[in-house]
Length: 268
Image (tube, rainbow, N blue to C red; front, side, top):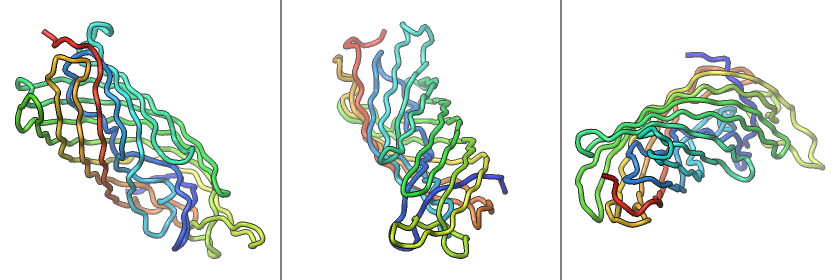
C-alpha cells in the first residue's frame, strides 16, 4: 500500500545518526479503570519508530521514552469510565506534548477490561542541520485480562490495535547520490546535498504485553503500581530519493511503570 507520505529527517550513515520525529505505536495507557478516583502517573519506554529512520535504507523500530498522566474522577466529571490524560515522548527537546481522552470499562466482574483512546498533536524540531514538522491524530482500542486476583500481586495480559494518521514535511542531508539520509557535514567538511519532502498517510500498529499489578486493593491514597512489558509491530513510511516507496514493517519493545494516587476509600 502506497501513501504520499512525508519524511524529512536526519539519520546517519553507518556510524552515527540524528534521531528525530518520535512516533509511538501505542498510548501506553491501560484499558483497566482505576479502582477509585485519582491519577495514574507512568514513566518508561513505549514501542514505536522515529521518522528519521524512514529515510534510511533499512528502517527499524525504536523504544521511545515517555512520561504520562491519566486522571479519572467519575463523580467530578459525571461520566463513569471517562479518562483525561496527556503524555510527552521523545528525546533531547524533540518531545511533543499530546493530550489523550478515553473511556474504560470493566467486564465480567473485573476479569476483563476494555478501553478506547483518542489523541493528537503537532510537533517540530531542528537538529544538526535537519528539521521536520508533523501533525498526527489517531485512536486505540485496548483490552486487558486479569489472570489471577490477589490483594497484593496479580498478573495480567493485554493487547490492542492503534491507527494514526500522519502528515509531515522537512529537510535532511543525503549521501552523494541523494538516495538515503545522512548526518549533515560540519565545517570544514564540504556541505552535503539537501533534500526536502512532504507526505501523509494512515498507519496501523498492534501491541501485546504482560503486566504485574501490586497493592491495587488497599484502602489507601496509594492505588497500586503496574509494571508492563509491551511488544508492538506496525507499518511506517519509507522514503527513497525524496519520494515515498512502499510502507515498511517494524517491531519494537517497551517497558513502563505506573503508580496510582487518589482517594483512600473503596468505591461502592
